[in-house]
Amino acid sequence: MISGYKLSFIMSAAALVAVAVGCSTVSVQSTHYIAAPNYPPTDPASVQILQTAPVAPNIRLGEITVQPQGNPTREMIRQKFQTTAAGWGANAVVIVADQTMVMGATVTGPWWGRSVTPDMGRVIVGIAIRYVQ
Image 1 (cartoon, rainbow, N blue to C red):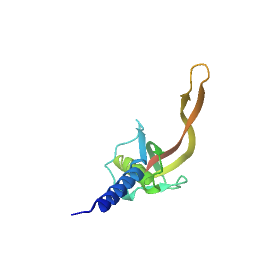
Image 2 (tube, helix red, strand yellow):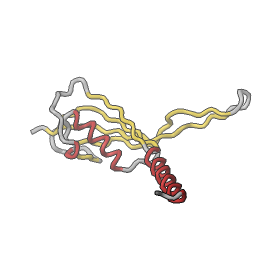
Image 3 (cartoon, rainbow, N blue to C red):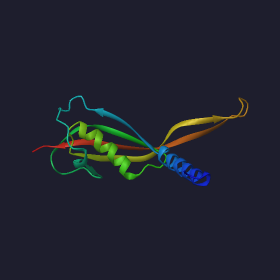
C-alpha cells in the first residue's frame, strides 16, 4: 500500500511531466506542388534537413510550414519536417525561413480604453526536395 505522502509525490511528479510535455506542440501545414511528380514514400529517418540548397540536381516537391508552440525540442521540429517530406518521397528538406512573426493580437480592456498586444510566434518554412539521378 502506498502512503499518502508517496502518492501525493507521485501525483505531483506526474502532473509536472504532463504540463512540461503537454505545453510543447508543433503544428504543420504543407502544400504539395501541383506540378510535382508523385513518388513512393521514403523512410522519414533518411530525410536530411539542410540549411542551404544542395548543388546536386533535384526536384522541388512542396512547401512545409512548421509552427512550434511552447518549448518543443529540436528533434520534435525535425521529425515533423521529416515525416511530412517522407510522405511525398523526398530525400531532403531545405530550410528557407526561420523567423518570428505576428500571428494575431490580444485585445484587453473596456471599449473606451482598449489595449492591443501582438501575439508573436515562430514560423519555420522548408522546401521538400528529391534528388534526381
